[in-house]
Every structure is written in C-alpha cells, then in structure tokens.
Amino acid sequence: MNSDLNQTSAGRAPAYVVGLDAGGTRTRAVLAPAHGGDPEGEGVSGPGNALTVPGPQLTEHLAEALAQAVPEELRGRVVAVAGGFAGASRTAPDEPGRVKAHAALTVALRRLGIGADSVEIHSDIEAAFASAPGHPADGLALVAGTGAVAVRITARACTETAGGDGWLLGDDGSGFWIGREAVRLALRMADGRGGPTVLAAFVGRALGVPDDVLPGEAPGPYDTGAWTRARREAYRMHLLPAVMDRPPVRLAQLAPLVAEAAARHRDAVAEGILSTAADHLADTVRALEPQSGERIVATGGLLGPDGPLTTPLTARLHPLGLTLDWVADGSRGAVALARLGCAE
Image (cartoon, one colour):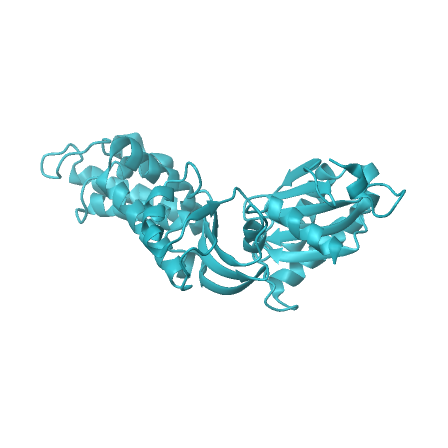
C-alpha cells in the first residue's frame, strides 16, 4: 500500500473507508484505505436484512461488526461508509428498507465514534455487482442462495427486477425452492404418487423422523420394497409436523442434501430438481432481455466454483451469449462504493 495515496491531504493521517455486506444470515464489515490498497480490518456479526431484522437488533449487529473491523485508534479516520443491505433499495429516498438501514447504521456509527462524511445505503445486490473485477457500473446481477432474483443495474443502481418475490410467492430455483421440492417429492414417494428417491431418507433424517419408519437409501418399488404402507404413513405423520414447526424459509437448509443425492447417488429425482431449478434461474435472467456478451455477475451458494447449479445454468446461458462472473459476497463492492462516496 502506498500511504501517500491514502492521506486526506498533505501531511495528514491516512483516511479509511468501511464497506458493509449485510445479508440474511450475517453482517460483514471491511476496513480499507480510502484511495486503494488491501483491506486492513474485518468484522462479522448476525443477520442484517433491513426488512426482517428488528431495528435495535440490526443496530447491534452493525455495531458489533464495525467494532471488530475498525480499531478504536482509526475510527476518527473513517471518511466514508457504504452498506449493501438485503431488504434495502435505492428506488426512492423513503423506501422502508433503506430508511431503516440508514437509521440503524447512523446509530451504530455514532456509538463507536465514527463520524464519516459520507454514509450511503445500497442493496446487497448492488454491492455484490460492484464486487466483480473492475467494479462495473452497468449489467446484470443474479443471486441464487436462500432466495433467487435477477436485476439489471444501471449506473450502479437496480433499475429492473425479475423474481425475488420471497418464499411464499416466488424465488423459483432458490435454495428454499430446492429444499421445498425435496420435501414435496419425499412425501409423494411416501403416499404412492412419486417414484423412489434417496431424498425420502435424507430429508426424514435431517428433520428428525425416527429411524424405524425411514425408508432405505435405495428403496425398491412399492410392491416389493421393505417400506410398507404402515411405515410410510408413520413417516408422513412425523415429517409434516417437523416441517410445519419451523419457519418455511429454513427449508433452504435441505438444498445441500439434494446436491449430495444427485452427485453421489445419481438420484434421478434429485437430478430433476436441480435441472428444473437451473431452468427457473435461466428464465429469470431471460426476463430482463439480456444482450449477448452483457456482463452478468452472480453470487449465492448455489453458484460459484462448487455450486450445484453452476454447470447446468452455464449451459442454459451459453446460447444467450452470457457467461457468469461469480463473486463470493458484496464486501469488496461495498468498499468500492464507499471509495466512490468519498471521492464525490
């Protein structure tokens, strides 16, 4: 790092920025020099969704992550903060998620004595898009994790959206959707409407169904298999309450079981779920009418180097002239956006 580039003016101490990636499962804060250079501090805390996390709790999570990332002796040198928040949008100044995130972040910064001149709220998708090499300003972003959404980004702001309507109304192809399909098809196997799948055993075990009513991991046809009608009825009576007793979105935790069933067991039902999920994601991207060669940045646990949907989705996007550019999260993009804020 060239310290001369990171001085607010000649003879003054180096200035810093903070980028925040506040998602549905964790909040990450990154401290970096204001005008270039590698991160110098990092902090992690609890969920940061601006719509679903109560305001006081959101403030606590932000303060905890910031306190870890920014040493006390450097807090007076932070000149800009940018946060990418799940549940926030820049569509309007009074958008509820944006207002709530800004209020919580303002309190957290004041509590720690961080008096940044620039404090900006972005969506988590905007921050993830800006994390791509070169910190692009325009193109497409695709998120495929617990939820699923595609957006068009223009001048670093979301301008068009496809999908992302939540577990009840949409998120087709997401981790939640995959987990729900796993349970649905396990129940269809149990009541006789669906074919055999190792997912019945995987799902049942994950949800605490007693071993003595689980099917084997390679059950035969119903009329010859050891999974009798009585055991299947008992399986259903245990599985349904276990599903209903938890927040629906937690079905996303079952998605890795589908990936395992497809990869290790070549389970046709699991393979079908993943194929259909890739179809849904491709349709979501297609809804934004992408141009061949347009930049498309992807993030989320279903994509990336080890993501179960990376290969099938890549094949579906290739005819459109699109190549996925994957990023792990939005923290680097948030730092880039913070640096832009202090340069304005």
